[in-house]
Amino acid sequence: MLDNMILKSSQMVLLAQSDGCCVYQMKNETGDGTMTVYDLFPGVMLAYNDYHMEHCLSEFETTEDLLCIDHCREGRLEYSAKDTAYSYVEAGDLKIDRRLKHTGHFSFPLSHYHGITVSLQLSEAARALPEEFRDFPVDLHTIRRKFCDGASPMVLHGAPSIDHIFNELYAVPEKIKRAYFKIKVLELLLYLDALELPKTREDRPYFYKSQVEKIKSMQALMVEHLERRYTMEELSSQFGIPLTPMKNCFKSVYGSPINTYMRIFRMNRAAVLLRQQTSIGVSEIAGRVGYDSPSKFASAFKDVMGKAPLEYRRDLR
Image (cartoon, rainbow, N blue to C red):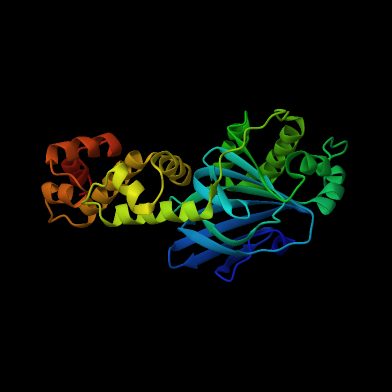
């Protein structure tokens, strides 16, 4: 049953398998990821997703009636909102879909993604759950029609109680995992069954693929040349995007405004240099990440990393 419901890819290999649990690994030139999958009921599985990569390839295709519920704990996921457009899932979001558009490249704009997927093969699960739990009140086909009657996913942003349901799944003692997972899946289904959707739902904006590709090229330019400070006007002119759409699209792709994103990126790069190149002084590191003033660099580093650069380096010894 697992093979019919998980991400399929030539980049994925089975690492380990035990009773009702499989661990898969995916690797490519941008990094790696793991998926730990638990078979809970007939037609029902739960998977932990931990990816440290820029993108992955999915060759998944299905003719089955599936309902897949993805919770994003950290990172970002880019998905096709329309044939020529992208939208994004971020931390705290719940994406519900039928996996009818689950083939192709999936991008992780922050180079990592962590979350949980609950997948149901509806005809099998609809038979099994009432047998496992007498008087189980949830009609799975009704839930599917409620949230994703068509091919496109529905994304719930900050829905009440979602974090409560999922956060408890990230620290479960090994000996109670399977039993606890079963209880939490039932809780999730009951919650979705009872959740009242607003009559007028405000969808998250989507962006055309050509525009997203420009934003990704812009980000690649800036992180490759950290010593240089690009103005918003320079970037807008160089990549042919008006200022306001450029800022809005960048924030949707990467989760924060351009200057905020670059500030954090610079400090993380500086932290790597402080750890790995201990013979280089703080002033030189400041210059490499675009700061002419060591004192301004030290202040920015402490704001982001919680320690001054010398203190950070000293604590690593």
